[in-house]
Image (cartoon, rainbow over all chains, first blue to last red; front, side, top):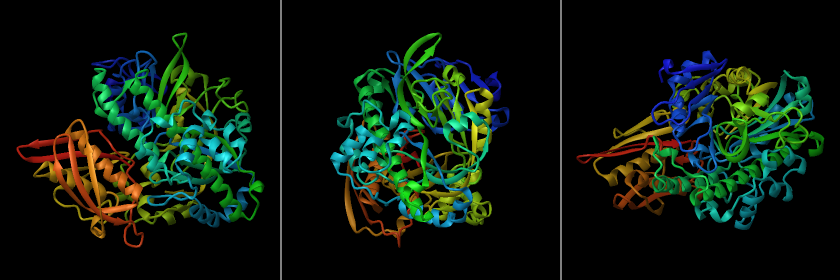
Length: 480
Length: 146
């Protein structure tokens, strides 16, 4: 996209003005330095395409970690009027409720560092990853239906984790309105052996530590102190969510024609929020949302057991507490103030994180005074961030911020660039012990394949949609 | 070869995409196009030449048009790979129209000592999807969410 089309509207905010069939502007969050690489990608055009969808409110947003997706850009946020607007599976993505959990541990950083190789080996054995690896948690159809309705509560009720984990999970780990009757047999089949599995691609398990605190009072509220050991889990709803998205893209394709919706890209297939097709998708999507919550909860349990074994302490001795768990591929009916009026909207976040500000009733009670934790994983070599949501995010982006670093290179380009290098050794020399099924995955996921997450975070901070709380650095990373 | 150790035939190109991956396939008929697209998709995950056709699975899908039909065909093959934990090397289309395809795919159970399976395809997308027939010269572009 030509840079001249953009109009700067704030320190890290750019706007693609309304043109053609756009109903609202597209707003891009980026620093000046990031702009060239963003414009070289197709994400800005995709944000403009989203702006053409019926009932879109305020603007089509693209967070600074945006990159070219399919239909909606990754890093896209769009809110739709409940009566005039649409819901789109492409605005959520295939990996429904892909998300991140951050846990903080009571062990000393040096104690963990000394045993990091043993710990990473134990985690690699305990948490199934990659293709063909079934989960260790047996689930029949009845259990799967319960998971789809109860989410993390099912995991805790079945011995995987503690009630305290749920309190610090978005939606308390259970999204209301899930209806298993909306889910196809094929989706149930794909759900069967995947509870407690990490998957592949960019999904990971990371052991790290708090390297820097930027906001002491907020960090204290989140239970984060300098040198505290952390564990992050990044994964989603696995084949169950993929199949649900796939099933509904087909029905939405027909619905798009039925309701006379003109689309610039077929992957934007959608239906009016209140239509039977739209409601059916939301019911099924919520099943996948809950499955992903249950999955991360089960993985957290496997992590606790493996970590206790590797560190030679009882599980309770780890004091491995959930700081927060967030979704970054989801559509939710939320209440927001638009032009001074409170409205219910269907907010799509695809590769974007909810970032509610202080005082919001949906922020866990323990954090409500300061705002919602926003977890922003970087790549496996550099760092990750914990941010906090702001009032400005509420007014500007429907309470949304970035979700990660965002890819810079295609996977093939990353593999080409990594040839001849021993990334396992390079990362180990940098203090990060990596475990993966094969070298190729590490090549695809090498640090340089991603944007510098610090730049992404600085753009959010400059735009005022999140504030920095803590910097995390990795000690060990397991890739699917 | 960037992806697996599979040797890319001259009718297949791999397409770079920031987050995902794709294939561009050429063929002499719609049936051959579907067979080759299936081979191209699986070659992103593993080398089909390391696979023996010990089992046959039947694939039958319908869709509203030929673009959606290709997505459904590939999605079903990907689903069978994931659910049955099988890898495939043979793709035979028996009957095909604009809106329905029936075929048989041959493969075997994943054996980690012989099959290196790299990652997974979450879904076959409609993004940038194109199926063209220019006087019998068929081509298709398909992107996969990986």
